[in-house]
Length: 176
Image (tube, rainbow, N blue to C red; front, side):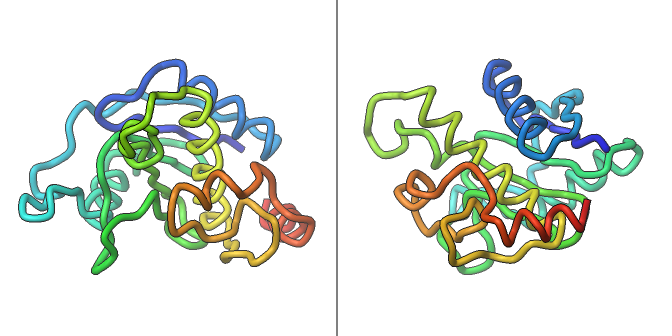
């Protein structure tokens, strides 16, 4: 099994490398990065909201990756995302599907007027990537101390662990 990481727009090589390692270690699989996409289609950007529409970005990622052989694809970029009437999302995934999407935009301390911390950005990005991959493998949100718990804000991302609870881990094992 291989999980493909698709960098969108600009993503640091160090963060991509750390993300590949964390996903590989957590899911006991091979995680590989593929050639990135330097620009998203204009149709994905909502000028009024100054954000990218998750649904349009997911469709674009699907088109970019449909010829690639990999079990799951996680697209990662530094763009502000919205979904429907939600003001923002950290990411999304096709439940029991192939594609997940995460954004580092609101995971970065600088968005909140704080000093940049690579460690916080890396930790938050890993958590959100594992969370969205969990959805790709059919997991729902979890109410326990688990990476699958729903995060409304970045403090909730910080407070959840980087691992799956025992129940989610068992569901994931069956899905794999």
